[in-house]
Length: 161
Image 1 (cartoon, rainbow, N blue to C red):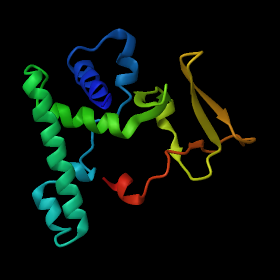
Image 2: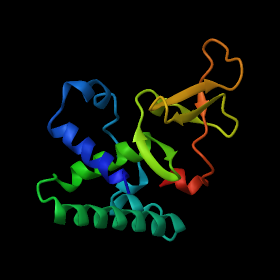
Image 3: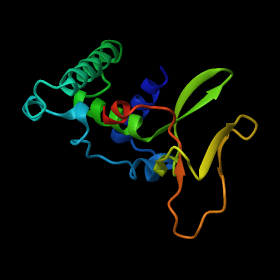
């Protein structure tokens, strides 16, 4: 999955910032303590005997497994905490695109700041010809009105985890 490449790139940016991408990297959030996948065992006690604990625990296990598999092949890649930060940044800020019928994840400066709505006022596509994302208003947008895209058809649990 190319999400791993984004995670590794983010980890590298943290350790070896380059001038070309540092302005964008510095806009990314760094506190994800409120994301369910980052909850401690003590935090999870609040949700004891709920389906959420099962889902969150599974997500935490998969995250640890993903890290250990990458770490086995890239021993110098950094700590699990660095990996979790990059994972949270990548999964909370990426956009997806389809090229030649393959779905890819990518980081899109400014494009990752849109919120979602079922009836968005902005749509986006990836132009292979321009090698860029194109954002277009779906209707007249008033000054000061928030801009929304649609993240896709996901249930609330997807956004919770």
